[in-house]
Length: 93
Figure 1 (cartoon, helix red, strand yellow):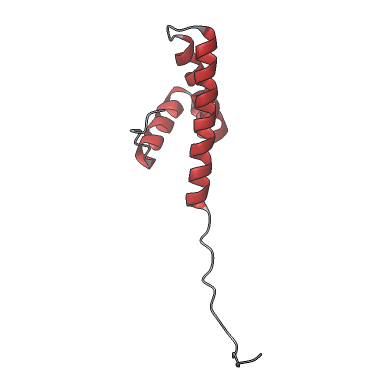
Figure 2: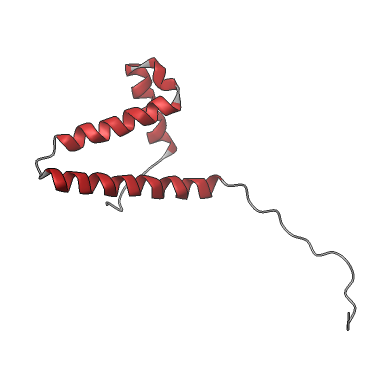
């Protein structure tokens, strides 16, 4: 997979806007996600390569999407609260 991808909030919003312009039901993000999956399959179907290779690439893309999802989940996770020490420590206790 390319390591040169620049995934930005603006890119995501632009793609979503294009899909909504095409189909207003894409305001539902699950429909947007279905469109993106269908577009991936559509584009891969038009690649000049052996079917087994196409399927292997689709599996890699699926794993890549999972990796991005997990990375974004980590960014969106709430930060752990700072733990403050409290109490009195006495030697030998």
